[in-house]
Length: 108
Image (cartoon, rainbow, N blue to C red; front, side, top):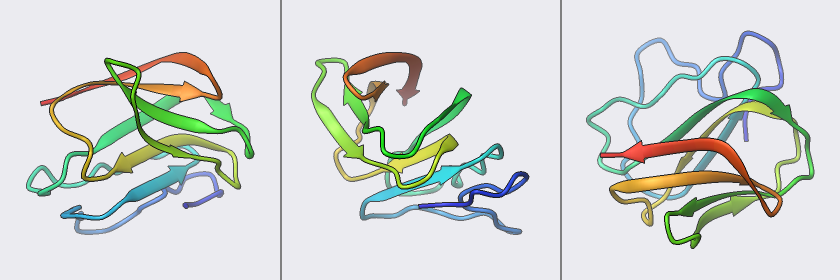
């Protein structure tokens, strides 16, 4: 999942990173290091204004409210990276439980 320490990203590198496949869900407390643009797989990144508590289901849904990815985190978080093969170009929304949040991402 990711870091629970202040000042650390869920993924924190010196040289950057790519996501070229698989399912990735990364949580962090305050920093967000996005993957390199030459990643072969699409990625949704969020830096939230609020901390989401552990144990609350989060979902990434498309414009048609179809679940693309969901998880029940075991730690609280404020930054989130989601990548999986089902993410394509379009608009995606972050849900907290069944509630649609203010957070959306446009994937080119």
